[in-house]
Length: 134
Image (cartoon, helix red, strand yellow):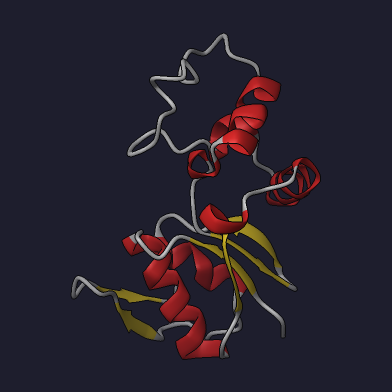
């Protein structure tokens, strides 16, 4: 099964999700979106399939979202999408694509719903927290 992770190696959640994928399914295709950027069509397809709006996928913490005025509820999804194209860091991560679907995997255990991992399987995150597949 081909798995794609839109990944930021500086993010602990993204690193944990990448290690979960590697540990249970093998090496995914890793897209470091801060280096590659996004296309409008790519973001629209990811968000539509994941049932997310640009606002729901907006990374507010540790990003320029607030200083760009994007946290104001009056700002349109189109404006947020345009900002995401200009500033890739505004897209929350990691976004994982599998044959089971696409999801923003925050918290990291969200990724289990996209993988064929038996219930009860455990994984130890980089901070030592143990999580289990429901």
